[in-house]
Image (cartoon, rainbow, N blue to C red):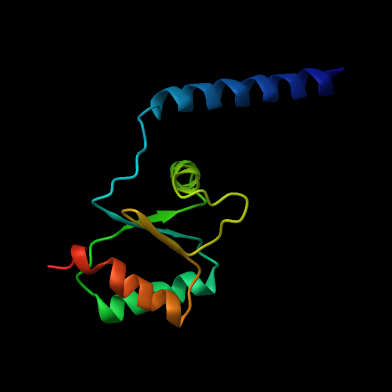
Length: 122
């Protein structure tokens, strides 16, 4: 009987915490066409390859890095997937650049990135 009350208590506590956190984080997350967004996953080797390429070729490039394993990052990833009609297949690395996106990393995607970021270079 004590176990049941304990489980109910934990469930209510978690529910209350999630509700309060949702109230605090109720600000709207948006994707601006004036930014470059880089969605990444820490254990993704292709994400590391992409960021190494950017650091070597465009060290001054301003981009917004979004870790998809945070609640805010995941919410923005979902918005990005809707914007570009990426469901059901979505992966990292994912770049959102205005009206364009690049998913995955390869030599051909590096060339696409070079093309799409030209307007963002100073």
